[in-house]
Amino acid sequence: MIFKRSIARLRAQNWAAITIELLIVVVGVFIGTMVANWNQDRLERRDAAKMLRELRPALTDFVDFFETAKIYYATTRDYSEAAFGGWQGDPAVSDEQFVIGAYQASQIYSLGLNAVNWTQIFGGNQLQHVDEPELKKSLANLMTLNFELIDTPAVDTDYRRNVRQVIPEDIQDAIRAECGDRVIPGKPLTQALPRRCDLDFPDARWSTAAARLRSRPQLTEQLRWHRAAVAAFLSNMELFEQQTHTVIDQLDDDPR
Image (cartoon, rainbow, N blue to C red; front, top):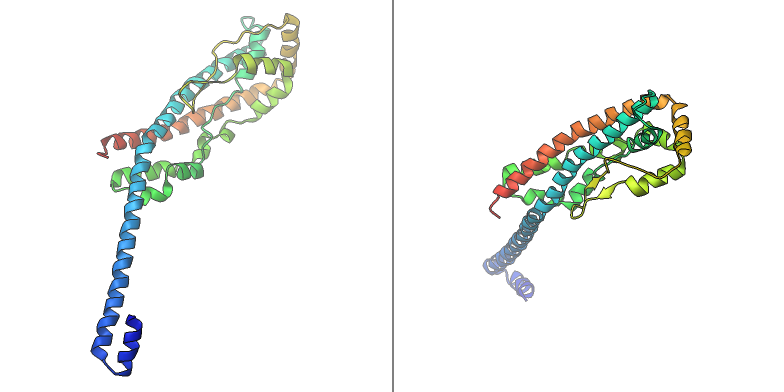
């Protein structure tokens, strides 16, 4: 309707009316765009606030993982001491303890979450709508950490693969079934490894398996490297733990 009137007045050379109607159209488009942008920004900020509310329990799961990883790898280190004792012929280490220790020393526990997954799960696109500058900065720092440092490849060493080629499969199956990883109830990212493992195999079976391990002394060097990789994993994990606690503290201080 406005367009038709404008054409008619253009023919009549009514420039004042044409100008006014064009201004009405331009202002209407401008206001409509402003309202749409305001509404979109409001929705995005609402989603960002929702993300922050949901972030606290997820970060608590992270903290649970950090705490249990320390205990887990302290347990595997104890098993590795028994394995070293078996390779060194320590009479205090039985063949059963030697074989079980060699296997359990190769057990690994990682977060299994890379930076891309973290960003998708916890709203990387919504980060720009977080109003608190320090919280935004801390959350961005956590998102951009190199998650590969605490992922499975960091501790999946040659020792883990090679020692499992030597230990008989039935013994490995029994260790996994009776003394393998256990998920801690109510904590989805956590696992525990039993500190002791006793299995019902004949002594001769343990002796044969122990002899196979002793015939491959190079595994001791690989085990030392494996322990070094685990130590690096735990050291890198401290950075993630510190940054996670920083975000949690700032979330707790946030009034929303």
